[in-house]
Image 1 (cartoon, rainbow, N blue to C red):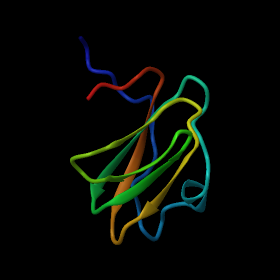
Image 2: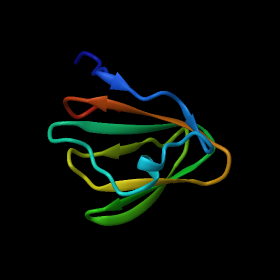
Image 3: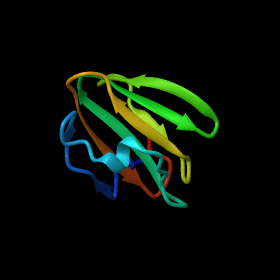
Image 4: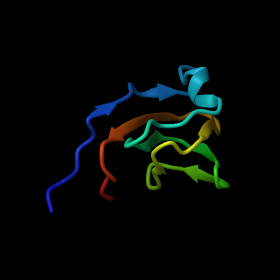
Length: 91
């Protein structure tokens, strides 16, 4: 199977440049998967439906399903970006 590539990626954000919109409740659009990739440090991903939390690291990215409400919280110094896909991303 061919590699699935993102159609768009955010800039790399750190704990200071992470937009307020990502720190507050938001969701992806219909038909869009997000993959949060931590480059350095740790980031808490809070899913609102169904409710759960996970700590993301460079070895553990966070998958956001289409229209899944969530927000992120930096856990100290970190760098991250979000890759967006029009189909479920591979590993």
